Image 1 (cartoon, rainbow, N blue to C red):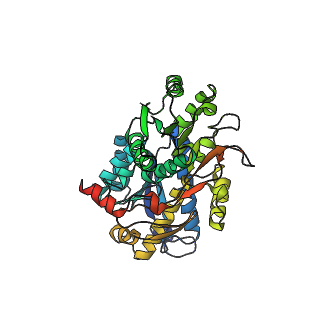
Image 2 (cartoon, rainbow, N blue to C red):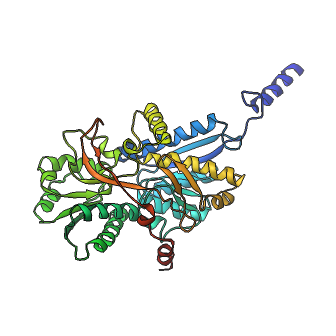
Image 3 (cartoon, one colour):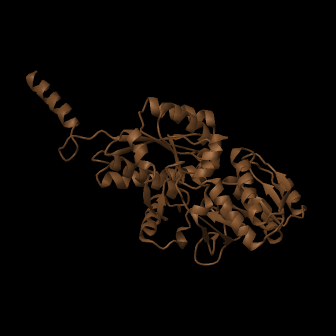
Length: 405
């Protein structure tokens, strides 16, 4: 019996040791909350998850954060705010995650943000884009390491004004927070460049719309100088396929931030794509010449068999949290938040600062015409032009004024 007892105690003892013989460190857990099912999951959620996983693997292989490994707990928000908040509660209350990152739907992001404010747990948005998230709805526990609608609609408006300068604009976008905020931000920016421009028609399809023919017909008969479109994800793909049959892109000038994203264009062919549309990209890796970018996208492609777009933001977020914890010399999230404010990150797109005033990272955004020229196997934006992020985002004074309203 004595031998059995000793053996059992040794087993317990060795169970607390790492493979090298040192005490096993308690993992630092964080939550990954995103749309991981359906078309949206395939286009945005899964790539972002793969990028975050890659960052975790790299960090753990290099010794973790202050000697502790990272552990990612992933949940599917199912593009539903109520479901997302349930999952956030479970991760925070039952799994004791230190922060949550992810989300692509702005409605989901706003709901999770409100809960994380109440729970006093940092929430870092990596995909969702409504400017309201970090503008008037921002708070201490909310960060975004990605662009927002103000930044990239200004970039698109700037390109449209320089390329076309039309005065009659048709709007089409998804009928919820993101689509309506995109319209507002685009028109605010465009009318400063073309003061007498006006909207001559608007269409607001639901997410996941299946029949685009009525929308295409209305746009093509509208007489608009160009169309500003905030459709995204699977809707960009299905709209493009339907519009191609009408010769739409030969007859209609078309622009929108999501028309250049590799998440959608990477699933199209050189035979059917949004030819000539002015599209945007958060990470046109084929046009970025720096060692960090090349190392990241080649590793990501090898591990996932996909190409990164917004996933670069999820990857950067994990490293940003590592940097902040090491700067704070603690896993205490109140100290980590203080460290994040004003922090400069070394990213795959260059140096990016997280502003202290609104916790918005000044992530850049590129715009260019969609083409199939060159050696890339899928349609992509060519001749990408970068709008200076300092000019693209609201100023801290503007954010403060919006919050007072």
